[in-house]
Image (cartoon, rainbow, N blue to C red):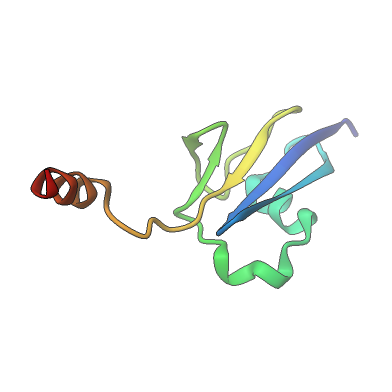
Amino acid sequence: MAEIVVEVVLALPGQALLRQVALAAGATVLEAIAAAGFGEHEEAIAPERLGIFGRRVTPQHILRDGDRVEIYRPLRLDPKDARRRRARER
């Protein structure tokens, strides 16, 4: 069976963890995350905060060779609220 190699990146406050994993062709985003071994940061991984090269995807998305799976952290502040706050301060 063919093999693909993907990067899995977990964004944490102050750092990003990067792991490169080899998987069978047809593997999903969820399988790549499991293979990356971020178990100690499991609470930071949410299915609604996943992407490939900045584009949101589902955990069942089929990967291609060379993809970069990104696990995003939650926003601390809504961008609209931040803009409103900055506008009031000016």
